[in-house]
Image (cartoon, rainbow, N blue to C red):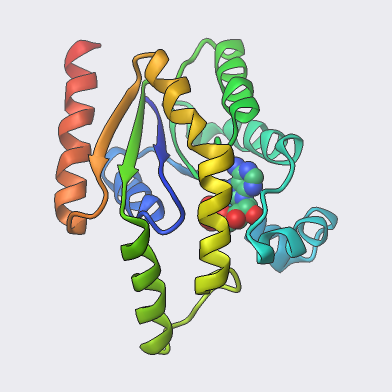
Length: 194
Ligand code: AMP
């Protein structure tokens, strides 16, 4: 099964992807994690993306499409994967469909975590007050910018996947176990249809 977890930054995609990985043995393919690992390792790719990521800008479509294709061809993706933070633009979604079609696969379901922007900003502010470990892009100003980037570039994917009949919208503001329950119910629906 190939799933896309979709939603604005801070919606809980990473948390839910990790839970899905544990329960369904589907690897989490997070382009954000892959790019952060490249920065950490000091690779040319990491160096090229570092400043854009710190500002909350998207890196190029070609960059993420090629790292996803390489990662998807690893043996642990033989039963599918959970795409987390990818695709983020219509060209990325088109490239993903093409990549999967070339491998005789497809996206089965896109789970949109719907959240309230003001609540997301309040969460970042409370993480800062609590003195938690923050990512360099985890500040109120950067989050505001990342939300703008999301609405401009990524939100059009809602229509893209709705037109394909693959979109399922969930309440991302619910408590983590409740979101997990909603995801499980959606996945059971797909399994029942298959
Ligand atoms: P994330 O961890 O998914 O929030 O991603 C962190 C940052 O990595 C984003 O703000 C972008 O700068 C970059 N990034 C991650 N995934 C993508 C993607 N699919 N397309 C473009 N940029 C991405």
